[in-house]
Image (cartoon, rainbow, N blue to C red; front, side, top):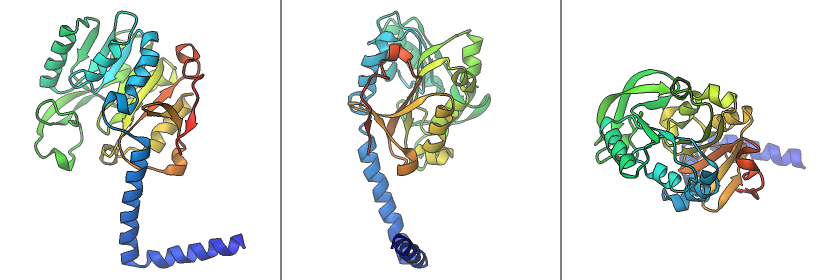
Length: 279
């Protein structure tokens, strides 16, 4: 009976695949399904809704050094350092010269002398590349020429690998690596391969969204890469961490945040959290 049902389903799928109208309908349904998944797994960009504020309250008091990739004008860094018990120290990567100037001023105004701004885009290689900068310190500025960036200015920026920048500064370990690189997040992780492989980064928080399509990256590959280095990967939501089987849900390319951490990190705080299934 089961074999018969599978055969019938397979036959129906092939028949529908020969229909242009059915394929067009399937695309519309798929797009709507992706939106449903995005609504389930993501939230708004507000720190309280995305889960970033919840996570910061949990781990910032146990952190002494952080790295903020895609720092923009420092909103995340200010939120995170406000929760730190020790004098804040970190590196903030921002490739746009004008935004980097503003970022340095923000750090100075906040009295965060231990936070250095590096004017470069962190990725998996060194060199230079075009950067599409939106007006008014646009949060979706990045290395990929997305259609909605028609108003963006194109400038060349310096590229760097985290492994190189961190080793040059003789930074031994990182408590938190936050990545918000507008689709380039996975390549940032590839540029930190040495530190990840050596487990010198306790926790990685990265953003996943539609920009990953143009970057040629997938969540499936990112999760597998981090898991291969011993990291536990979880979906981050406003009220905690969730277990998500990416192989089951597939790529949905909608805004959401993920956390990868080493077992035992932060005195085992994350290990003791209840982890509910996302689906």
